[in-house]
Length: 125
Image: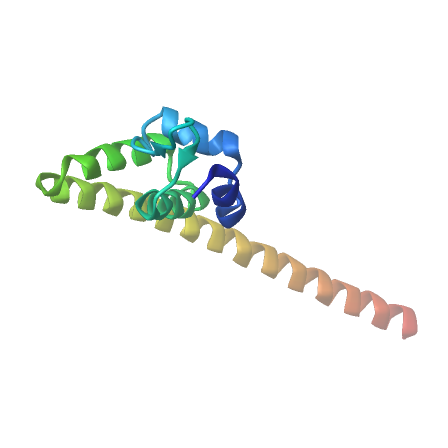
C-alpha cells in the first residue's frame, strides 16, 4: 500500500508516517524498486495500534520501547505486558481525573440551572 493510501485509510499525515519510520515505530517498511514506500498489512496493523495508543496519550517513548521489545520476539512477552499494564493504569488514572472534573462541571451547571429558575420565579412572583 502506498503512503497516500495509508494516509487516507488512517488519517495520519505522510510526515507523521515518515517520523514513525525514522524513530523505529515502523522500522521495516519495504520499498519498491523505485524507492517508494510499500506498506504491508503488518505495517498497517502497527500503524493502527500506534494510532490507537497515541489517541489514548501513550507517550512515543513507551511506544518505541514496546515496538523494540515486540521486534525482539517472544522472550519479551512479560516486559511488553508490564509496559502495557503500566500504560493502562496511567490511562485509567487520567480517566478517573476527567470523570471527577466532569462530575464537578455537571454539579455547577445544575446549580446554575437552579439559580436561573429561582431568578425567574422571583421576577414573576
